[in-house]
Image (cartoon, rainbow, N blue to C red; front, side, top):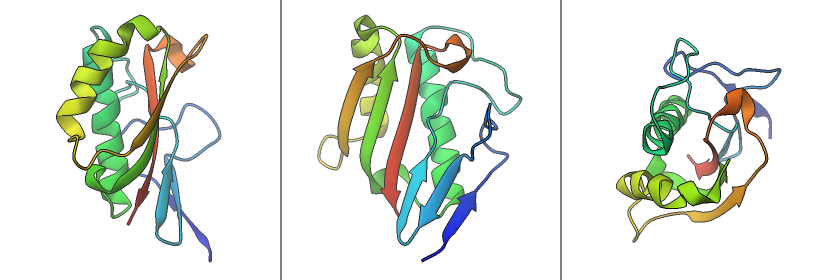
Length: 126
């Protein structure tokens, strides 16, 4: 099996030496997405606005790789502050329905690139 690099201009570009996603076999592994728009600007607002942008970036990357949010099997959410869990979860629940939602871990971290409030990475099947 060979790996395939997934890049799209419909999501923010990486802020370091990595790719938006990599697929191998029938799986796509995304890099952690932060709330940057396609121009690389941090979206204004709080946790809800940032989570929405992160999910829109994930949708763009997954779509480009031949997958979708419905095919996500594992999500990892990094929050700068676990007090933002409810706001993040409210937006997350609009995109991941309970009956088909992936397994998920949510972790508070000391710092996220660009001082964002949230970062999410996923594994999905194609």
